[in-house]
Length: 86
Image 1: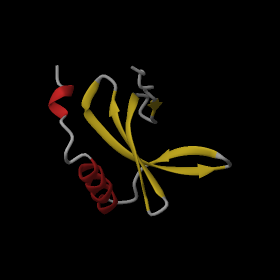
Image 2: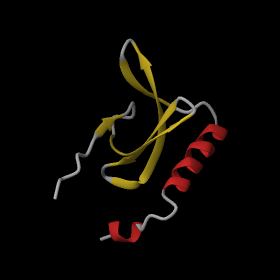
Image 3: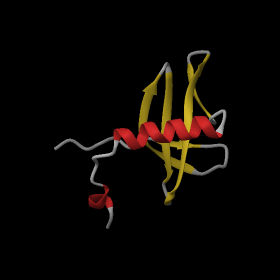
């Protein structure tokens, strides 16, 4: 059995977040993050490239957040999250 690599990101608030998913849609990559100490602290960023570096930026509007969240829920609609609860 192969272990999954967990990726962490520290955002501008100084908090470490775990990357839980990435979804590409219309040339935009949405990155879904959860606080490593509080899984209810969830956020979505989009990945932009600047000088060959990937940068996580906030979303432009509430509509874009809703769209990104819908992409996530559609992708994971059949997932069994109960197995993740202690």
